[in-house]
Length: 162
Image (tube, rainbow, N blue to C red; front, side, top):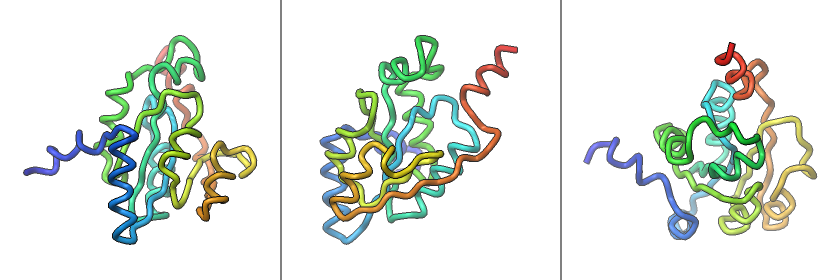
């Protein structure tokens, strides 16, 4: 089987993700978690995903559903639908699993999967990151990556419109 045949298999339901993570844990492996809309993938996203992947044996990405993105970003978003965004992420070598979530925040997903390391990009404090206190209370750690200046999906959309 070729590597391309495994790409779609990286996209999991929460139940499938929990089962695979349990198997990873049995073998002593760790996983990091990050999340986002990833509407139009840009170098800032790639930097953040690569940094998150360096933190553990596996990287799991929580992906906001279309409805979640609309509630967070407005009625004209997302540009790319959930299936397209999940497939693009699954094609990245640094991403081991993609799990879609419907809520506005990934708290339920984080609680279900309980990552060893949670990585968030941005100008946040740990107190502001959804799920951080739960991950820390469970013995995990939270890492905040710097934003790569000059890259933003919103700015890309505005540039395209001009």
